[in-house]
Image (cartoon, rainbow, N blue to C red; front, side, top):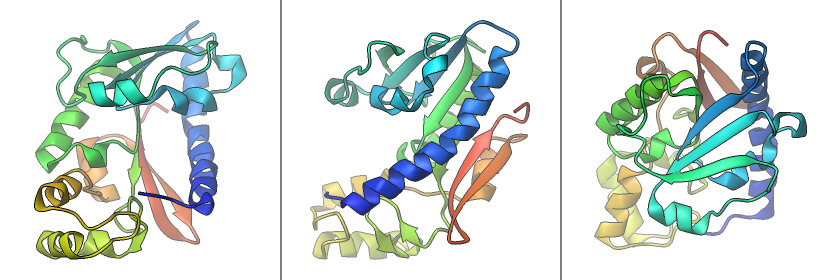
Length: 223
């Protein structure tokens, strides 16, 4: 898949705007303690280049991901306190309850597979984190964010299966059945209502583009 310069420019702009919420959350936590421990589920070290310089010596980050992701996304800036660990965010028995001050997730929950996996993912995030910041694309935004095709994610699965196998869909080339099913299973976009059910009691923050609902974020109600 290839995305143009405009995509990455807009992507970076919205990511920085969204991170203002996380920045405020981190600073709120630091009012009562000297350091913050973060578990970034499905995270990549390069993402944390966005962290403000004055927070870098106060924030300890654990990026949890699959082996394939860990191999291609090495640690970046030496002034970031990051440890990358192998794991599955849908099942984290290696971490105790409330092991982290904050569980962070940037566009991951829509990639964990089934809706049952999303529930497991959400339950584990709430268990191991005292607070959470869970961002994901909004189902009601008309452009499918992974392929750049209008309305594609609103189609029934059988229609999407046929189209993936017979056509080039945005950034994606037509594919075999196996690849097609993987794409469908691992790109399930949810609505604000569904995110609220997965993270009851959280605030749902809505991001808009030209008044359209672009993304949603579940933030601990204590934020």
